Image (cartoon, rainbow, N blue to C red):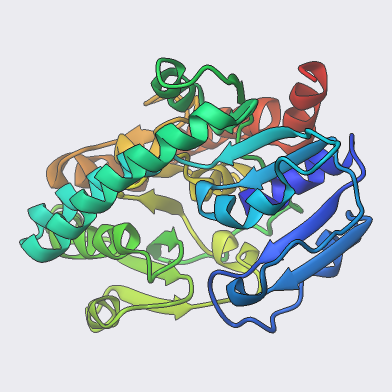
Amino acid sequence: MRAGMVLQVLSRHYRVSLHVVQLYGPYDAPVPAAIADLCSRMTIVSPVRAIRAFDGVVFDIVHVFRIAMLPFARAYFGLPGQRPRWHLDLDDIESISRARLAELYRLNGNGAMARWEQEQAKRAVATEADALRNFDRIYVCSEKDEAVLRSRSHAELRVLPNALPPAGALQPKRGSETFTFLFVGTLGYYPNEDAIVYFCTEVMPLIQRFTQQQIEVAIVGGGATPVIRRMADLSAVRLIGPVPDVAPWYAEADAVIVPLRAGGGTRIKVLEAFRYARPVVSTSLGVEGIAAQPEEHVLVGDTPIALARQCLRLMADPALAERLTRCASALFQRAYSMDAVAARFSARQ
């Protein structure tokens, strides 16, 4: 989603050639027309065919999305007679995200994966150091990431927040005695799996202990692991799976949960909840890098009892939910809408 957002912003200022290297299958998936229409030319290839695709074209800027793309972008660096400016877009700082993953695996008793992720974190530090020496400009998604990289890079650092286009108005939720919590994410991503298991096994029972109201946890996203499928066996959990449009599920939700305990960058799922005007209950890490204040835009809890207490507050106080969503929607429009981020990009060119 960030790659598409950044492409939309760039296309407002540059003539863009898009070179897509599909690291993850299926390799025959087409680029959506809305993205292709932003580009003057485009190629889409698997990694084994990722050669220089635009022979004879002189570029002013080579914009690389994530360090993982760097090996495929080197063909455009240092060509005779040209020195394009090199821009790198980091949607997170991989060395930090990997280290957090290692700690999460350790917390969950998986020592082998903890050691593997810790080794990957060390490698990421070296890879980042090499990249930070060679790029002219680094884009990051938050002021927090900018502060982390400031001492590590001599490149120009720019904050380009994640953003989303506006959403159509949601229909009011149908009358129901059940309070629905919504989780949206890529379910094969381990921090999302952990978040779901953590909420369903440690937080949800506490909510049920202290209220007579029926609750439901709706889980939306593709790639559900066997562990998540086992959570769906719980009476209050509903596994929706992948959907073509998330809007109907936001319309049915009373609140959005983001109980993440690892990850990096900023969570687009939080911005999506703000856009759809649904109150958010999150861990501190879940709203990291977003200019959302606890009690003003979100409710935050970092232990099972704290998260459960915040959920119970929302269930008991519709006025609190309305105040949170009003403030969060205003923050989204001011700082995280496509127009707001595009204007910020233009002002700093």
